[in-house]
Image: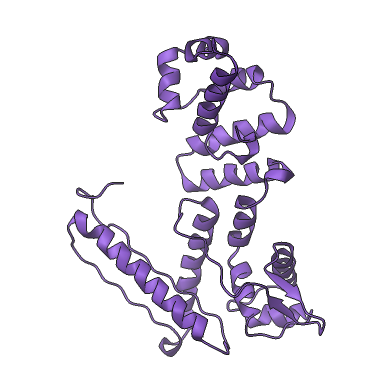
Length: 275
């Protein structure tokens, strides 16, 4: 089974743990496991099914039974709290803690994605490297963004992008992109991406208040639809994004950075839509 630090669902971890134990020891069973951690077998079945969560005392007993200590114990407890979180703010808090505790060998994709999307200026500066000649002048770089950031924030972004291998310094001193386009894909459940989207909504409000209409395009559409048609609209949105990306790829040379937000959300209780 995978290492603990690679899990973002403790239900999946428990499921893999049980399967591994059964393969190792034929006599190992869910009933035996439930007895060892002091949980009713019926309740534990529902935990495995993701229908309920372990109580705090049960988590402590489980950590002891698994012989977790130090960082592993803290990670598992944070993992449970992350999965139990009822608000996005709490979920992001525990997700951050998980990333700090994760073993270095497991920090391949998710932590990098988290760091890249955690602050809006990272993506802005990444794209700016395609059209702005940056050569270590962080004060000037900071002034290129709108809203303006501090030179230390600009330096933080360049250092992160360099560390992630997204930009590199050429022999002439200019920092340029190593990839001309990146995407988070369609998996929008990542709390890293959630944080990024939250920040871009704030930037949209800033633009609405500070940029003239000639530099922006804001439109809204309120509509009533059949729930079965929601996926058709989402597919249209995906196709539109692909069309925009094609224009972006052919836009050469680029001379500015823009951000495109697209939102589709319910304004009434949904009936024919699967949540």
